[in-house]
Length: 451
Image 1 (tube, rainbow, N blue to C red):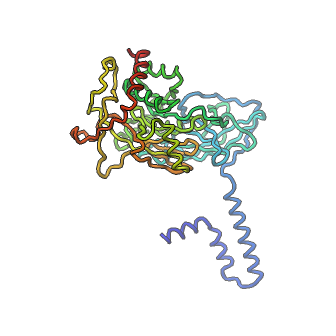
Image 2: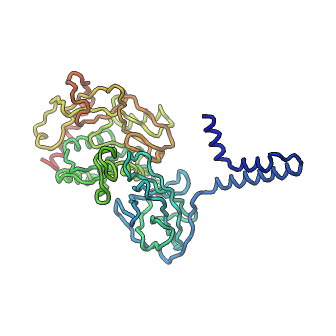
Image 3: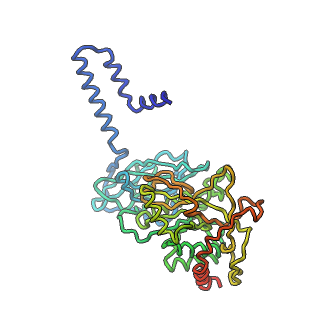
């Protein structure tokens, strides 16, 4: 360990070896003075080099007007480059940069450049990008990436183009609007990010129940990255969009890549895992960074269920007071198998609706020996840089594991321990505390859409 440390220090300060060669054997006052001046110059130059921002934008030419085709697509491929652009965001937490959320081939994409056009002078700036492929790629060749470029100091560009070369014509490149330029007061406290809806999703009843539980618990916005779903599900989504609760982000990732519905490459050797879920989650995080106090990262069949508090607002106030430096709050996922039913709320009109009635599933599986339960998160988006599905990869604050007696993730799905008898499961009726409001709200939605 000690030897590794010393080797690391040598790499960081290569000028020390030069200094020893020049000055190691000198004894005269003149030689000593020369050596001190030389060392001082080396240290100063080294410091200035470290302080210089990398890849500063350079003006390459001027135009009379910023043009370029503005794209509104959610996923835009770059020509012949194995790079897909989702959306750029202004990020001033570590300097004045544009952070582009994208998807890249982890080996083949070596260089990218941001092209900024500054109005009104029409100067075109090109900045070499830092390509940061997220570590949670799970073996797939394509993964989520941050494409980060320094912005010009003397302008605040509204649009950016991404190109594999610093040479070319900006008019021929797709142009992307840079979001989050202006900081605004948060219009909402809680936003749920759901990614991605695929496989002709038709679990209509459980989806409506989850949505109404989110609203009871305090959500104001649910963002869904939709690949596809059933016609009936489309009708339900339209209702929630009209009332202002749901925002749909089209997610046609299978038009560009061979997608897997599995999380690891060893299970299904396609281009990218789970319909690009991690990219969608990161985009949702940045999309809501300036408009939501908290962002909740979970699936449509999951509900972060408070046990000590009536709703998310009181729960998060308490958790933040106890953990003032925290950026991420992790909640244990617990399986409530849909194969074990307690028909306490067998509402006849719901029987014609496709999907699971979560009120009838209140038995959860016990913890498995030597198996850590996965987590889902409530985060302060302004403190997170990169996220994965069950934890964040980079953040400015701490992550807190929320005790199970405070809250858990209610996850109603197929069992993971299918051979367990009913008596081995744990009855947990926390969900029933909300049954009156939930039943009334679900009925309202069903009578406007399905029934």
